[in-house]
Image 1: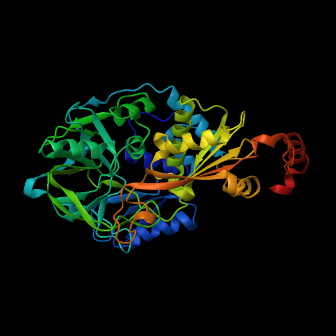
Image 2 (image 1 turned 180 degrees about the vertical axis):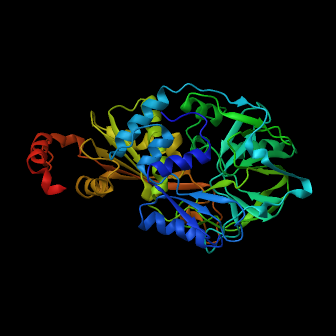
Image 3 (image 1 turned 90 degrees about the vertical axis):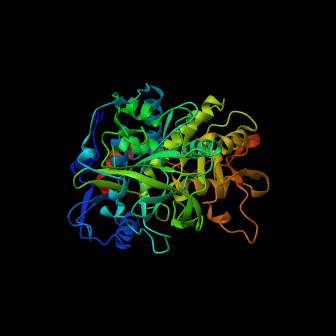
Length: 480
């Protein structure tokens, strides 16, 4: 169990104890920093990297990147045991979240983030290192691994979400809120009332908060603060924002407050996105006019540099999305689920696999259809694959083998049309002169033995568990 109230500096210390932290000195924030994140992820096992003495900011300001990139670090953040089996980690996470009791945040008088406070004309975002992450990005993005805090104008509940933010000048940042996300719903409600939309954004905080901010498992109307407090068994401490009144985590390293005015927009994008492509092109987005900037001495910001999948940085997200999807499907009545994995190669969105033990005709089709339209799978779930219980859904080679040997394309592949999509989907980024209509299609693939003759299907070539155990005892030294 991870101790309550770890701030980001304590997380850094723990990553160092695991032997999974590297330091980079004097890196240029103009492309070099993002390129190091990319190369590290794909070539060197994706250790966490703390960038220090960043070029032009030698006096202070650090960036922590690649913080989720291993089973050890993911297990530490989620409070579960790291395991070579991804499915077992998903199962342990499900048990943990099932027994979680929500704890609302606790307000405290002050916090270290107030060591440096700038108001009004004193605000200057360029006091902080702001990377140009990718070569074709439309600008410098401060909002990557951030937490955007908003309040519902009707019910008053607080939402935490991770959305991208491109800096325009020292007091303004374009904020992209994806359609359907809770923060976007909050913004739309304010704009419909012709009212300014108050926003607080944190760049660097407790990784519990950042984790829940990035995922979609928290129901509408419930605050991520309550989940993060429940995960650690102790309320998250917050301070009230002096301009917006929004609760800002006491563990924050850097925070801003401001507002978006209806009709006040600036160009935003493109940005190298989670899909491995530049997402959305340049478009007009509401701009946050910043009223306050505060940060700790020599702050640490969390930087999330999306790189081409597969990326180990998606490891933690895959565990959480897979577990949440599993729970949703079981609550919906789907039986005999043996495993689910939202694959890193599909950035945990586009390629989702479920393993079941078939009990009746149509069981595989039911699993595919439910998985494709449940809350976690409805958005951009391009490929849904159903496999038998002898296939590890997290093992891509086993899944491809099942597709190649158990799937008859004529009878086992269906196309669903007019499903929920996203303008960040590269397939729909530009489709001739026709604007993206918010919809997509998806394939559901039954890579299972045909139920009608499942007992007569050829036997798989495999070693029994008993034989494998005896072999390892006798010949284990061969494999060391």
